[in-house]
Image (cartoon, rainbow, N blue to C red; front, side, top):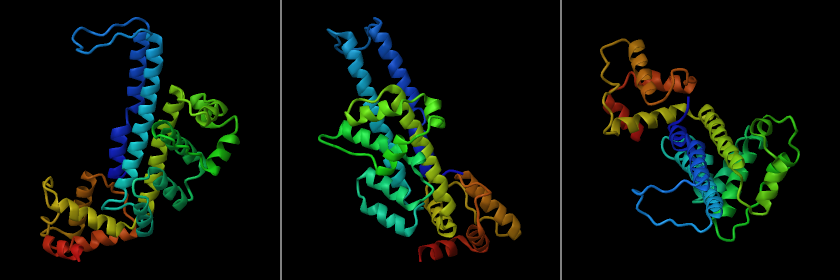
Length: 284
């Protein structure tokens, strides 16, 4: 199961590498002599096509970095909106970070020990590289744990072998504030998606299900898009009402195997309430 925050993140990020590849192919065609169509009503008369292509590729790569970080920021913000995925303590810490995506990122990796450097180092690099590339006078540095991971990464590491990365060269380019290569940025984007999915699983695993389900159901009742009411099955058995309620949650992305003891307690209580009773209790 994935949260609504993750599904929105995945939708926005899903084809980022595909779009970047398409742009790169198009720019290669321009370097090989492709001309703009007459229907494209814009002036373009480059005196040095190769130079224009190189600079345009750098622009596309830096834009991809910015897009990836903005979507990571979106995910971390959505997790703090009702129904929240963060605990009360973590929610308060996230709120204090205000507009800093890097501080949000540091907050979640500090709060969840499962997020070890092999999972977050590439995301750390993505954010720092984007900040240094986009923001004037930015000089972000990698976290010590990330730098230690990269400096001691074994040659048989799955990631560097899968993507054929030269870690030393990548870190040197970052240090010199050079534009990352296509291979490097594609890897950073892919690893960011994996990181968010990992974090999402952790947050859903540790969530207080009663509060989460109550808030979710209350939002759905108030939503204009809600087509049915799960309180229309009072004349059936408790078992059937519970099954209908679970099926309703499935339609909004909550799988049938999601529920722990806290979640089951919520289901067992709600199936015996009228809609008005549930709304009044949830609003108290």
